[in-house]
Image 1 (cartoon, rainbow, N blue to C red):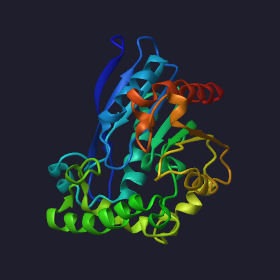
Image 2: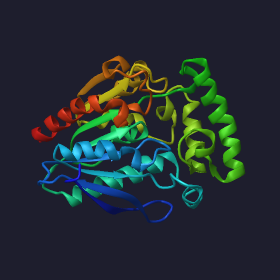
Image 3: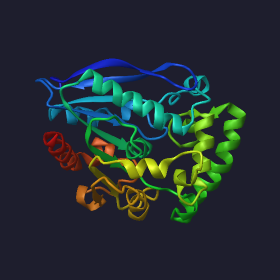
Length: 294
């Protein structure tokens, strides 16, 4: 990996709450890149979590863009962006990152990978106008009342939906780093997230968010990847979301821990080198095929 070049980048975002920047990185291979991959993160997950996958993709010849959502990180960032909602990450941050990548590399094929919420944004068409392929990791239509086992449902409905909202009101941000739910995030994002989780069909049931129609318009080929031991993104939850893609060709893949000689993978494991590096060539092969078809 020493031959790879990692550059700091700042990506401008035009927002309803005022213009600001996404902080990110650009990974470049030793030779000229043959395609671009933009990685869109999950909720409460820091940009650095995706560096290992970005390095693996750059080693395969991709120029790779990583970044973090506004307000994710320490309490200062979460408080400074307290009005940022989940839909702002979807419609503003993801769109800004995709547009920046297309402007930076106008002559290359563009692909995208979205983890959980990042995948939601891509399936709703926010990732750019020139995508030749989309990979979603653990991206599903999650309803808290349908999560199993009961202990995980309790953690979501009570831990996140009740105590999480109380903690957010007290602190002025969601203290995710203190309660085992990842990084700190803005208050408005937590409130919208828990509101969507209470609905039978997540954001598709929010009349103020035109998600169903947006998903139905997507035409970009999709590889939707999940794991057999993820309570948040089960096969049924993933299929419930990809079934809304009326025009986009969808390939489904479920990875079992036994395939990777792992005891568990869960919601984040497919992006961990220590857990799932053996699964990455299959994902990168698919992205390369889509990029070559443009």
